Image (cartoon, rainbow, N blue to C red):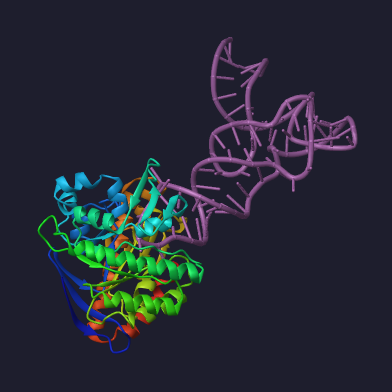
Length: 372
RNA sequence: GUGGUUGUAGCUCAGGUGGUUAGAGCAUCAGAUUGUGGUUCUGAGGGCCGUGGGUUCGAGUCCCAUCAUCCACC
């Protein structure tokens, strides 16, 4: 994996680059659609590639381990072939599920015991196990197995958790170094900075993560309920420590405005369920602001959802599909929101290259956060 | 014309023997959603109980009239 920076914005920490993988190049900054269970919900692969122009998508270790399971993925020849997706894939390690399914988990030094949300069966993940599953999935970018702390979080808990995440990282690195990839292309491990909202912990974690010298670095444990300002502060602090010449990935973020603000702080990669999940509930992101397509005010609005990103369908038609419970509604909305997110990061990239990102960003954030 | 049926929220309907502030589903409106247990979740607005009399301390509920509705029969 190779990361090449091509431009830096003079008015902020934003940068543009290209991340090269064995499944193709990824221009940065980039947004990665979330495809938890081997599918970006409601969107077919052809649309994801041709219309949305997703350059890389996510899969989830926890979910793919439970269904379809490691053996199916192995015999399929990996997730790329299984789901017929030829571009890069990144897999989350399951660390976030340890956090979000917290009522059913037990964390120990060796790993975490949890119960399946599907059938209640008991399972045990260790850093080695998480690496093994991700090896079978065959992702281009593999995330370290971490603990994502909740918000708020006691400092003593955050400190202990962070150190556990660091020890688990050592084991992930050792395990990745002692096994060959299964399908003949390179897999790259990204470690994850933790430390909750405590600056000294974040600093310690970022320094440790940087010292492991992996191909790229991630920032985790944010956007879990803390105020946006706090998220920006932590992101800024961590970006100042993580190496300039490697991609920075802010996990789970966020709204279109969050993404632009964090690009300005030096983040290169983002993922979030928001464009797809909210699309399924009728919320659309557009250049002019946020739309609840189910509202009556769109009943006779025959203008496109968004003239630039989705010129094909009117608001009145999409509203009709949602009101009628037609499954094409969530499909069109998901494709729209993802197309918009990809359009947005593409524009950000252009403005970084043009050197006027900071000013453009400020005007854009205003528009993005208004409700239509 | 005669006999019967039904009139309660925008729609479809609940509301034993009269008794606090008349309910539900859908619809409408407004929030929520951040490394996906989500066609989801939370909340709000909306009523001369067809109309007019009567009985009663008290009527959506009982009585009379009237209007509308649907059905059957001349």
